[in-house]
Image: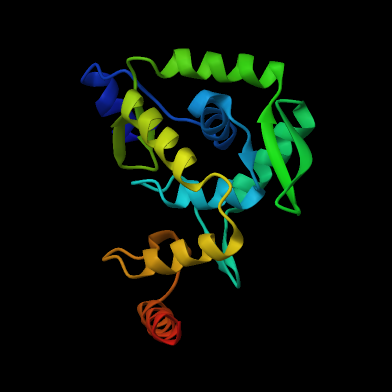
Length: 188
């Protein structure tokens, strides 16, 4: 336990730190346990939270979190989440949803965070109920968006003051990407 955690304990703050699998279980549990459409939704939605939980790498058509990828694969292999395929508007859609054991695990985590504060990263402490509300909002907003729409969201995020802080881009790289984006917007 680090000094921050021990200070929280001394202050009597009921805090927890969630694993990547626990974050994904919560994400699947909110919004009435609606299935998550597409693997990219996991990556995009968590990127769009107020305080990103995961580290990301930029890719040609989006962002990628090795932590999300690994956690989702672990959850699939443990039978906590199932992957199914369906057609919508003549497109093959990959959906992820909680299994019965995944729902039980999610309920345990929901119970654990009731009345607790969640330590995000090394510094941010957020009230559990607020984190759940935000997860639900990003799931409702970004679930099922297509690649074009997701790429547009990422590019829009580059224009914010903070940009994409966990992408390990140099200031020069970030500025270059912003210039490319401005050119992209002008051409549309």
